[in-house]
Image (tube, rainbow, N blue to C red):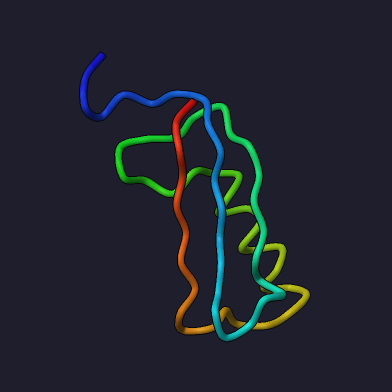
Length: 64
């Protein structure tokens, strides 16, 4: 496997300023320093509920 391979794994988003944005989930495809689609979808969902994300919003993932 190469450095940019995509594998199943976990993702998360978090904000120290607004904990309502803190959440996590699973994705069939994480890797390559690219935000997982499920994570993007969750951010869009939260935008409709909470408005624009805080400026300290961070995301990450971990391959299984």
